[in-house]
Length: 432
Ligand SMILES: Cc1ncc(COP(=O)(O)O)c(C=O)c1O
Image (cartoon, rainbow, N blue to C red; front, side):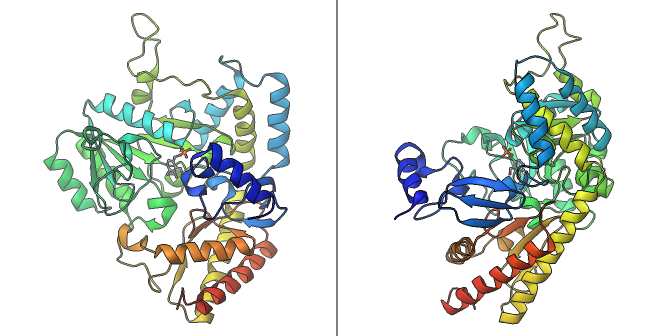
């Protein structure tokens, strides 16, 4: 081990579990520690340059250090970074969300996507008066206890120690199949809330069946369940108004974060006024204790809101999303051409500005989440190592997101590096 990355890793291991702040950042023998990012490129502590398809865990649709976001946040940092009070920028930001998202009649800001799904579930439970929640196998809703069971497809347990069984027992897992969902709801009167990742599991690596969102909307409306779309990734990425605006299906509540916060830390829950007003202390006897309690020191912090409002301005026309979609389509095409050239039975696919890889054959048709996500760990590691060595960084190992700063030239460079990585994996016998 030598170089700056190795030195940072040694220091990190002494003070941080695994040397990381997020389990997916772990890498053996050690990860790179990054020091600079601009547009769709970033540089590690050893000065190595990477083409970035992770883009801040899909939060930086505008690219790293977009000059107008930098300017807006810097100005706010100099005027009023954070006081813990109400302020005009949060109002402007909420007005933007109400304008863009069909389900948004009211907005409550949170500290992250995980906090958004926690709050939305509390609202669903409060409004329905029922504790149990139905969620779809393999969909991801953050790391908190209440929706962790089912995050790993095909497993009927929470993929973590420390989650109380009594909490997991409140979560019911369903396949993305309308008949099964209707049947489960019929048989379990304690379910009051339905949670769906609007893209399908893991930002569309397991696409939803055609008509699923419309169908689940009909089921929830007929049966009186609170329907929540998790648009933490799809919000402002699939379209300025998320997947719900693009596909014309309106949930009761929507969870947001990432792009919606201008790529800065935070999140939001938006939804129907009659549910969201449960958060308002205004009508209560003491004017202090709302029916549904929610606090959070950094909710809608001005330094975040300044960047978010600027991001809303830049992303509201849909032009950035169209560009990012086109770049992802170019990437998918290039990766598929590479698979074909090497005679590898694999597939690059994805919706909107995403690209996912499946190594089990040339199609994912008819496969469930567990089957689609069953890439052998040795292959995942070898691919990740080969790409990072060549200066290409993916998101969650076999997926990519694109954004405004990805140019055709950068995409073509990445395709060529990917092709070279595939040659190496074949040569080393990891891929055939
Ligand atoms: C669909 C979805 N929901 C919720 C979350 C949790 O968001 P956060 O990481 O901001 O807590 C994520 C994070 O990737 C996500 O992809």
